[in-house]
Image 1 (tube, rainbow, N blue to C red):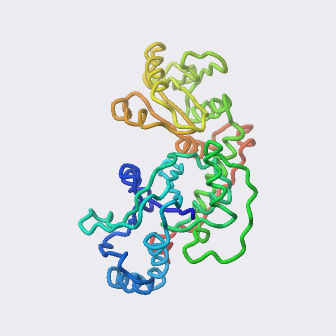
Image 2: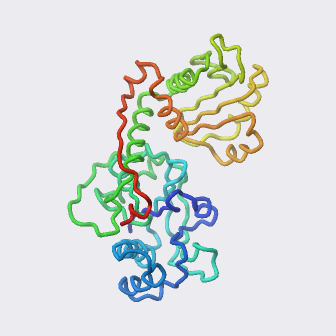
Image 3: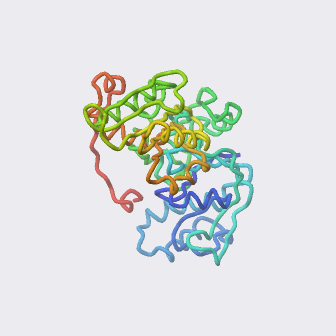
Length: 346
């Protein structure tokens, strides 16, 4: 058995297709050839030269390793990790062999069926070295360094949290499709920030962080504190005394699991009770589909912040945050060269 990384596009643009179809796909554009009939990787390279004549040979060689893994090396019973645009991880068990659909919609020609074991697992649940592998730029690759497969499989029994298994460090070459090569340094940096926020602002303390961000945005706030709050954690409004508009009612949940619909309904009801114009619902673990499908209906009334949104706001207003808070989560701005997509693949 093996553990694989399979991205749903460079920007997770095919994620909903993966989840809805209970399949993983090769998302190479225009690759309408039956790859299951090819005898070996050398034959695959010839096909790639025909389909992508403008690609450099080094690019085709790298891609051939990933594609060949999907076609010939993945097997039923293997597990696959699919990073989400919500900065979570979906884990599934591969249940079918490679399938080619010549009349499929581009680029959904090549797929394998998957049974999703768990969706939207917070990245902070994974050990940091495994996150390095999941942060690779490769689309498909086997994750096998440091006994990663056994450690991820053990997470199922612990509610998809780190099982605390000590890594068996591997030093041998794991192949040219190994995802520990070029990594997304920005994502790795965000993972470190997320871990620090999760540890320093667990439980009700996360309300303090949200309140600090709102103050940095120019709001005057009233924080109800711990205890029965009737669906109100923070009230916020512009102006020195907080008499401006919009008047915002805020509910904060620090849980690691996605939030269910009743909390959203409670927030909407509380907004009416306190005369708030708008609401802000914050949940570190994100939101169930029962919540997100209400977004269009409540677009002019409610905003949702998941872990990713909260970190975005935290980084945007970091310089305006209280000095003590910045001391709790000290950050240093780092500049690096931003390569174009084609340069990253060479």
